[in-house]
Length: 512
Image (tube, rainbow, N blue to C red; front, side, top):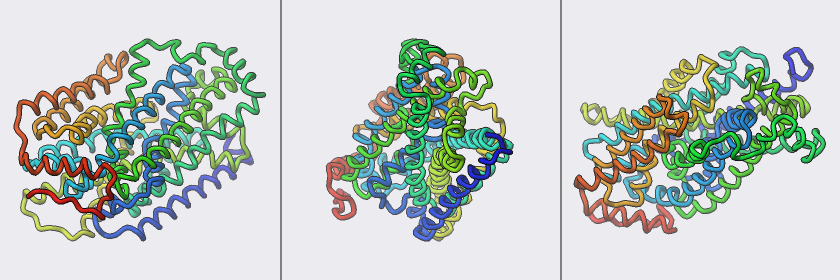
């Protein structure tokens, strides 16, 4: 649909309605957020299960779900769906084993509000080396991750409204920054819920209407076979290593700070099972929608989008030809929802790393006076702004692949934090030196592997995750733990609390 068409106004109106709704939710969250850092960064640990589940899902599934993944399947067929299969398995395991234990342990560990602060307090690390290292890694990899969202937003506006790539990117960045700056974690979470609902409806609507327009399932399959029958195969065109690499995306869940921070914000560990069922159900529906969209795109367009180098816009193109312009505008807004929900969550995590895990530690070491809670919140908002500006500068080139940027950041976090999060929750023998070795080893191996041609054969998260895990075990066994009795008491308390007792209502008595 061209800019000159009658439908352009309808689509633009729908997107403006969406923007207004997000800003409204952000303002509501601003009014509910206290001028304290734990309120701004973690919403006072008050998320209900359905809010945490949809927020975790929406912050996870960025623009790659509606653009990157359908584009990859459109080009290469169902062999690319192994990515999502691995993600669903990884997400289920994450909710099952990490969520309740992490929610309990972060409360026991002096109410830690970030992953770096949890690890530091869990290990009783007096050098703060773990927190500082984690904070730096979060800032480096999340800058690339946020940049992927910026790239997706620019491509979205360019493909949908023929708006200049940079102008579209700046519009999305501006609106997202506004509701994140003022609404904080609660604003990001509540907008995530609305965005998650919009995303799943849009992802289901496009392939369902597309199949009806094509004459049914049989006619759609026939059309795909006419183009390339191999695209309906889950193994054709993919080697064993390629399929393993795709499924290995699921390993990344254990180390994604913007996702697992939702576990920390649950009302209690006992809310995790309900949240898991809601979250995984949402993911399955979204995955089916993304795969269906790609297949309908193959049947409808053949190889036309591939020839024009616009495979990642297949969801956008279908929505414009299948729906009334206003409904198409709402469907297009779902792409923005996926992009913006992830960006906002990542900006909050970056901000918390800057303030809670870096600035506060530097301030204590330098002997600076303690700031008022409201001042820390203002610093957090400045952190959001700074990271967003850097990410926008990195995203100025529209040639960047959305999926490639996401894959790079996902592997970095999964390799650096995944092994240490799991071991910190389930292995009391973990030491500060072991945790630090695992974090650095995982991050370095994933980064270096991803910069070489090796990543074309094996996704860097596999060697990075394994290297980090081995480093943790070996170094921990060779080094001593700090405050052994206190650490063991906290470990036991976290295990007991994660078994179902409510958090603040039943304080845990620890040995001094």
